[in-house]
Length: 97
Image (tube, rainbow, N blue to C red; front, top):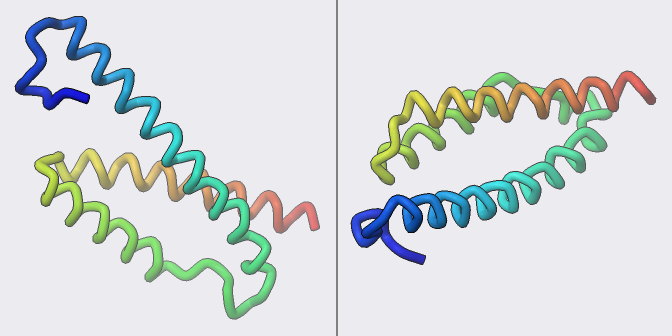
């Protein structure tokens, strides 16, 4: 693992991007296991989707992005997509029951 500033060639930059991409997919796959579990609990009206939770997640992601020097708008856009996929998946699973 190299810091971006330590890369001396474009090949080194590409290798590090590939490494980070693999780690991102691993983490997103882990996150997905929780989304897959969440729909089970959302069968109960008390546990159904709550808008405040989506806002809370987005606020945390934006704050973390700011801390890490990443554009908060980009992080928000990515997470809105991720959350949207999760909600759609949960709704489909619930309809199948």
